[in-house]
Structures are given as C-alpha cells and as structure tokens.
Length: 188
Image 1: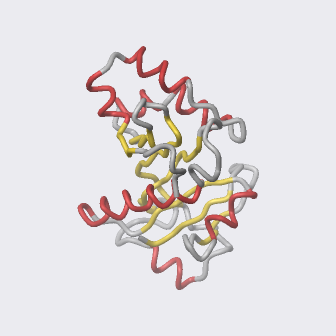
Image 2: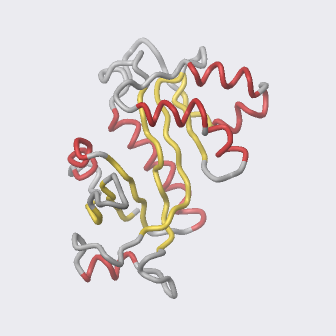
C-alpha cells in the first residue's frame, strides 16, 4: 500500500479543470516525471487535458493533499481486433464477441496510460496498486453501463505483471510490424 507519509486521493483531471485555469493545471502536470516510460510522462504533459476536454478519455490522478501527482491512469473506450489473434482459443473469442460486432472491431474498455511519478518509490505506490484502482473504477463503470472486458497495451517487461494471478490478463496479440506493444485482455 501507499507509504505512511502521504495519503493519496483519486481525482479526475476534469474536476481540476473545473476550478483552475488550464495553465495552472499544466504546471502541476509538468511536475510529473516518469523516466522509465517517457510516453506516459509526455501524455500527461501534452495530451491529457485535450483528451479530457474532448471526452476521448478520462484521466484519474492519484494526488497528495498538496496536489502532487504520485501516479495516474487514463481510461477510454477502445476496440479490440481478435480476428488474427493466434493467442486466443475459439472459446475465448466467443467470450469476447458481442452480437453483430465483427471480430476486428469489438468494443471494450482501454487502460491507455498508467504510471508512477519518479518522486514516489515503488514502496510508496506500487504499479500494481495503480492498476487495482483503475480496474475498480472500470468495474463500477461496467456495473452502470455494461461492457465485457478491458484491454491494455504494454511492453514485454510488463506482460508478467498483467498476467499474474492477481490481475488475470491474457495475451491476445503480440508486437508486429503494425503494432509495437503486446495486447492483453481481462474479462470484468
């Protein structure tokens, strides 16, 4: 769990935009550094506000009382292409299919970004805790509006965390010429 020094709250970026000027929010977001994955850092600095305002995605911030961002994740609606997956059994493909949806365009939830600020240690905020919180949010959404599963896209070194017994994600597409990340799914 989070270290004893700081209690973190889960806040939507959109709620911050409601009570502060964009430039102030950008300054706060700019303090988030993620040297292990510059794409995660860059998304928060350059794209999160635009995605939030266009309702393309929702970004959730794990913040201290002083509004320091310890970690964050971004959720959206995506589409899974299982048509060419060699990693899925026919039984799994049937579980994921929705009526009248082609195999190459199955709607799902997407965890698009997930990261921890360099100024917080793994002991203070483990990556799997951020993922647990993201999944809890998605289960609430699923209970309200429906949906079957969530997908993540990740680099090779993260596949084992997602596939762990704790999370139960299953690989359905590996990197290719068109896709640079592994794609994993989990039923909700």
